[in-house]
Length: 288
Ligand code: PXG
Image 1 (spheres, rainbow, N blue to C red):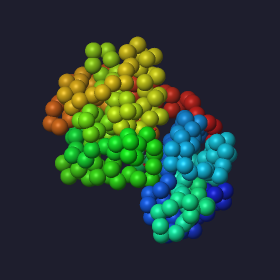
Image 2: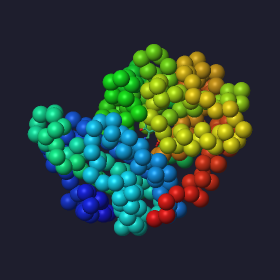
Image 3: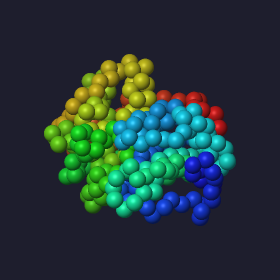
């Protein structure tokens, strides 16, 4: 495997960062998770734009232009002969001193890894997921805003551990007001009375690229698509529920906190959207 670090390619053994990198010492950095399908990078521009927005929010100057970053992603795929897979783009604050002051970090590390993707087992896509709400509250928007795709994922990891402890794969995270925010690595949607509903960003969710695509597809399918605060009650009485993310794509949810959602099987609207999403991933994107 050839890994991009600051304009050079390294093999797996030599692709390293300093133990003084603030990405490691403090989780001071940002990342993106991107997919390639059929020799094309899906929604590359959107992912790069979000990366730069995250960088801006944490006052991290990425020493490359948007276009150079897009080219670097495509070139890393090409060098690894990757046609279908997963691209992890990481920008760390870079090596500094043991103090947390980012001013001491002069050399941000831009890392691009192009690898195979690990998916949920196929049976979850057919049967649907069983998920639970967890005690760990989603990060507050005025603390570490969940809109920033930062290297601080402990909030999500704690929620994931709580889901695992409950014997399920994924967690619904609520915000400090008790409204639904998102899952640990996915946004959440429900269908009810011909409406497609998802929490707004102010509830504490990432501006998911897949979320945006699905909202568009929903409108094309004739659904009324709205961002609105959702309670656990809204989830329980939903006709359909599904999660969206670059890794998971669209995955149906059939049980939440022991309540069966809709018929207990993936719903028809979810299945239509899954099909539309697959068509889009196979036919669009930046050629490698
Ligand atoms: N919420 C959170 C907290 C995420 O981390 C999403 C929502 C969905 O966003 P996108 O833009 O992907 O639709 C994410 C994305 C990984 C991995 O390796 C995580 C994500 C995406 C791809 C891979 O765990 N999270």
